[in-house]
Amino acid sequence: MMQKVKEPEVSADDISVPVEALNVAEAAAIYMQHGCLVVRGLMKPYIADMAADIEATVRQSIALLDKAERKPEGWVSPNGSLFIPAPEGYRRDKQIMTVGISYFTSAAFLRAAVDPTALDILEAVLGPNIELFGNGQSLVKEPVGGHPKHLHQDSAYFEHRYEGPVGILSYVVDTDLVNGALHVVPGSHKQGQLQHVDTFSHLGLDEDEWPWEASLPIVGQAGDAILFHVRTIHGSKQNHSQTPRPVFINRYRRPDDFAIIRATTTSNRVEAEKQAENARRENEPQGLMVRGFRPFSEADGVGADGSR
Ligand SMILES: O=C(O)CCC(=O)C(=O)O
Image (cartoon, rainbow, N blue to C red):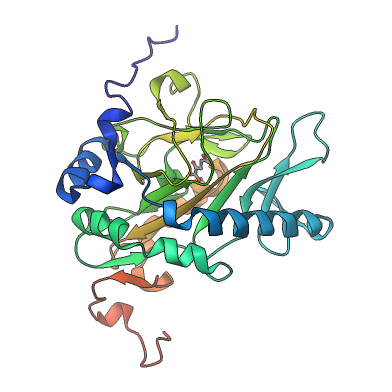
């Protein structure tokens, strides 16, 4: 018999602060307690440029779709966008999921990643030294049924040795229950690593154990940013509106942290788990430092030109 669903005990307002009246210590305390924090308006200065760059990349990706390569997760276009099967009746047989935009292709994306207010909050959470994890990520839900992303922990995809990355997901358009608001489960970062299953949009939690009712939808405006812990359960439903729903995500971690398991499916996760104890910091690419300094370590040494 299905257990009674435990609904969130906090509201979106309880975990939200406005950027204009930000108290960094209070914001960090909300993050530590709930594993998530909404900073209203944090990314507003970058939204017009990010919207234009994401849209241009999506257009480019669709034009390149006939050259896409088949991968276990779907089809990857030459400019790095991931497509998955489209909903029935859609005008294409494939829909975009992750967009091939990064700090290498969009100056606005890099500017957003080094936003000083965001870094002040991150410093209060992660400590004085912070590197970027990854090159930036963007997801677009196409209109009229664009993909759901089942509730999941990002640590199912990249489990870390220490604290793990903090993600900042930012809304590029006003986002609500119709076009695919992010849902979070406050406090779930304290649950440890949970078993995931394979879903339509890759690793996700079993819907019987983690139904949407267990999560808190975050309705917000373009420029609102949601910080979340690598173990915080989150996800988003389909886009039922007439227009695309883009978001972008910047991720940050301590410079001595590293992924011990990387996976996208249950079967490649089983294989990666067997190798977890062999993972070493020096086998991971260094992220650009965005706060503080990377202390030298023999194992993680760099040459004068930054090469290793
Ligand atoms: O697009 C979204 O709303 C969800 C993205 C997400 O959950 C993820 O990339 O981990």
